[in-house]
Length: 305
Ligand code: GLV
Ligand code: MG
Image (tube, rainbow, N blue to C red; front, side):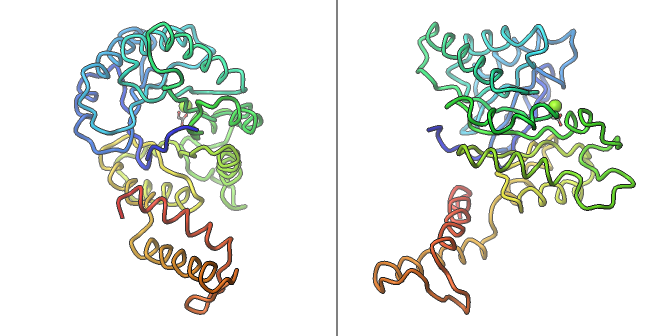
């Protein structure tokens, strides 16, 4: 079972930009990924790989979840990304993010390669987790099998930009409802599909980026939607989005207190009164209510409430 790691805010950092890498050390996100993929120009791939390994080795990342996004398996770069980063900096790395996962074999390939590199470097077996990006039609179609592909998997991550391109959604704005579509939320199906596959396998579900960095309302709306569905966190592409995400993906104090009261009331009902249902503030609670309260309570405790 993978360790629980808080990922309310996941900061995207292009590994090829030393200024951004330096700045990222001072940003209080729960997690970050040094990107070797789409934020890095093809001519810079090798330099970015070296820079990511160096940045992890130098440290200064505190208790954050430290990850690197390697290139996708349809490129010539993936195996060297994995080998170089893990050989040089495996001790300072928590997970690898694998983009454009379209079948379970992709995750199994990474699992096997990680096992080899860990053994070659004397790292603890299985210490490096995997985060799989679901960001095209094939990935979504195979999402249940992908989510079950390896015990190293910790999260499924939705990639909105690639996904929109993959299914030809007629919009140039990432995450925006396509003009002319008035039948509800065009993204509800994909978001819920990923969430269900993740939960069925004990994984976290993470929302992708909101690219309008100067529009806090757009971030709040898009994060608020997935937080309400049950997602655990969201990628952030600007420091101002980090603080917002940390708040949005944590329950509020009132909600947390209510969850704790439900747990107390239900515990008292079952163990002292030997009843399976109880009324609290005019609402009937049963075992399912206890499970709902546990979710809020766990997220609140992880956020330090
Ligand atoms: C992220 O990788 C995206 O494609 O949106
Ligand atoms: Mg992508």
